[in-house]
Length: 332
Ligand code: SF4
Image (cartoon, rainbow, N blue to C red; front, side):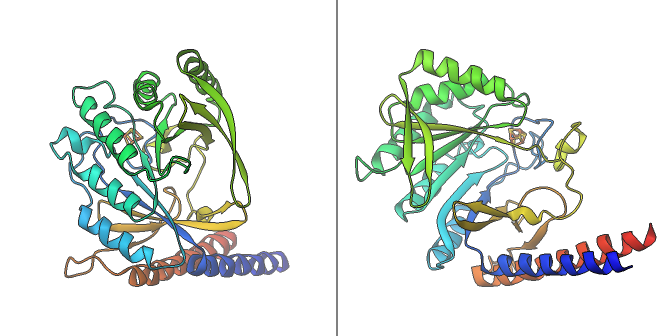
């Protein structure tokens, strides 16, 4: 019993820290714009696929949330646009959606990361996407010396169909432009990335660079003058379809790791999806989540969304402590 009380005290302290950070930590925004994807990868934590709705978070909703966030000193001025597969909008005839949201964010001086499965790179509509991306990258550039405003995140792993060929095509088409390319893979698949990078350095002019930030320095590969490239390796969580992959990291309980250290800062991510829900933190396990659409089908204000998220965080923390720690310990 003494041990249980001791560990409970620790849990309560931990819970207090989480709730404090949930309410006060600076944040960046993610828009999971659609749940449609032309692939159905076995590791997809979003359970995206070709049979899901071909609908997208309306651009007006994104503009409204970003505009409010710009007034909030806790917003770190960074946004991620992802899916499902966001570039599928082109496939279904909407050629403006991506251009509009990218330009809106960049014009408002928000750093943008757009994530794609690259499956469009070698398709008939790929050329149109490349043309639009080239225009956005060059037209939104104001100063030749500034760091790229747009990051394109690609995935290279054993799950994404044709990712080697499609990612290569994207880098080749955009090489020479001031854009940041992030290649993400999974721990244990380092060889695949090494092979890809070897191919890059054979076909394109690459060189090593170090960029100094306020409190950090980061290494990049420069490609054909202005493109910057880096890679990273993530842990595979057992959310969504990944639950069936042996070795996927177990996340039965809420992910309190939504606070990510960034240099000397603690950050949280706030993710809006196409089902009208907003989540604090990672994709996996139980979610700290609330609707961002009210009963009148209107988007809630950002302060209201944060108030609701903080209540959701409190509920999850209580569930975690009282159900998992106490109930489960006593019933063993
Ligand atoms: S992991 Fe990405 S590419 Fe694969 S199904 Fe999910 S959204 Fe689509």
